[in-house]
Length: 484
Ligand code: FUL
Image (cartoon, rainbow, N blue to C red; front, side, top):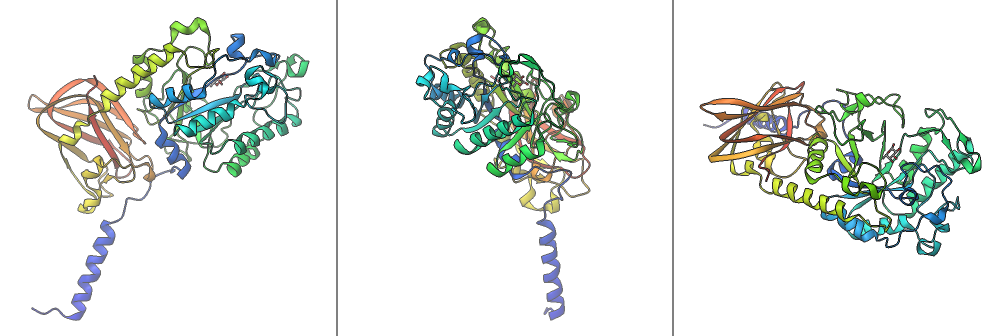
């Protein structure tokens, strides 16, 4: 049978329309991550280095009157520190270039209160440079912390100090290569040395720092750097320093009015849905009780099991983890800390060595447009840019995993394609036991990665149920693991 020209054209147009329809990703939902935030999400786990005069005076917050000569590490080695971080899975380091006491780890042009006057490297050293060079050598990202509060500076609380602060910020953002994260601390404790005044100085931390202008400097000098503070603008504090994100943790938040030192910890830990901005949480916690090294805490280093728990409750809840490793008076990471970190790494490596989902047959209750570019194979392709997604009206789909022989597992991993927003509200995992489906675990919020731990189960079938979502889900990856 011969087709008329018109019919032929009609068919062609129809199939083109079907292809165009099927090839379309779902429309994004809610606030979306920026490119710089996406790069930051990919890091997941990195280190914090707290090092200054406090290490030598045995304090947590220096008053600002410390003599520069106290800063005297005897065997400082940035490579030992960076190697330790790298070996244990960290992908970057953020250094306290200046903590609240005002002492600078680099020879700033704008003050003498720095390594210039210390015996370290005969006053000719630049610790920020040694750290940033070592990070680059070992393939780690480098970030900086510059405390807004300065208990040493005579001008603190006047407009002159803001100029000083911004000058220092410019030094750090121009002389040390690419910066992945700029850490703005919200602490402003009041009293200090302040050039000898030894008094209490109060500022209004909503207006004093004029954050909008300060943030502009960072954008201009380091456009790819994510800025951290209580309220972003790129990354939010998680609201506690104990090492956990909320059991429900949205990567979104209402950002209006949030500033360093100005946000409600109870909201920060959970985030807000849908929120006005993509503002993911960073979990900051120290491997020891304090942020700085104290010999008396040598026996209080967190155990490998505690660190693994922190990992699951931060990275496993869609946040990033910044784990503090305080160098000791030698200028090295103490042996106890190194041991705990290595053992944590071994546990995590053994846990994630084999993804049992790879041995399973995957089937879904719906695949968007029946199109193979959105099918379940995308859940195991190791890419966070692809996804299994469903038709627009299918917001509660199911995914089944079937094994030929029984498998035992106690960790479930799921990730969303966050380029399309944080879509899923609630989900559950079931396993087939005694001839019926039984729920093992349920949770809210997925985001860039969700890890759930539970008592080991042995089964031949598992099922992920998306139980609530305002739009069709778009899942990037899944995983099924057994802890050692
Ligand atoms: C806090 C500071 O006051 C601590 O000393 C530490 O630097 C921590 C990371 O942030 O706000």
